Length: 71
Image (tube, rainbow, N blue to C red):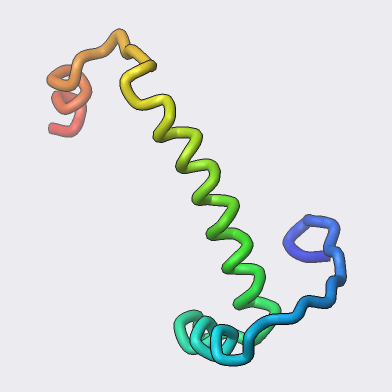
């Protein structure tokens, strides 16, 4: 189990050069590198859904009021 999640063991075929490049970027091993890549894909999809909402959501508090709380 990984961080409270049910883990699934899989076998994948990946270009060796791509994997080495990704591992160099993450500084991690194969499993952690693949996991990070999957997390980035999932996060990108969530970001796309949020971006689709741009301009479609109205807020009842104006920007000046929100910034006043920071002082």
